[in-house]
Length: 198
Image (tube, rainbow, N blue to C red):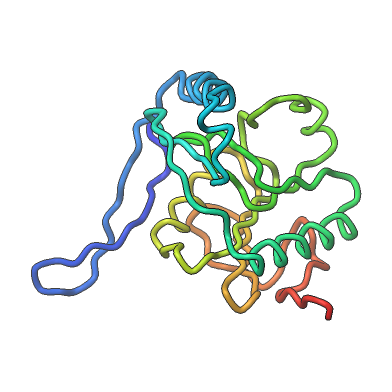
C-alpha cells in the first residue's frame, strides 16, 4: 500500500518542466512510530529550549525552522478568530502537530470537530489530520513543499486544506488532486481574503 502521489517539479534534459511522482511507502506502524518519536522530541531538553518550530520526517529525523515573521502570526490569528466565529462547534488549534506518512508536521491553523476532538484531547500529537488544515505561506515556502504538505494532510484524513498566500488570499482544496476552489464546503462563509483590521 502506498500513500497518495506527491507531485514535484523536475527539469528534463530539454529544460521542459515535467511532473515527478514520489510514492512514499506506508509503514504499517508509521503513526505509532511518529507518536513515539514525537514523545521523545518533546522530552528532549535541548529541543525544549530552542525557539524554532520542530517537525520530523518519516525516519524520525528532526527539522527546525525559525519562527515566522510577525505578519505571519498576525494572519494566523485572524484565521483563528474567523474560524472560532464561523465554526463554533469545534476547536481551533495553532501550530498543531499531526502524524503523516512523512513524519510529524506542524499545521499552522487547524479546525477539529468536537466529536473528533473528544477522542484526541490530551494527545501531544494528533494521530490523524483535523478536518481543516490551513497553511499560511512564508517567503521560504516552496510550491513543492506546500503541494507535499497538502497531499500529506489529505492522506492523513483532512477534509479540506486551505492555503493562504503572501497577499492574504485563500485557496480552498476539497480533496487530494483537486483544483483550488473559491469557497470552503465546511465553512462556506469564510472569506477568500484575510483582511487585518487596523
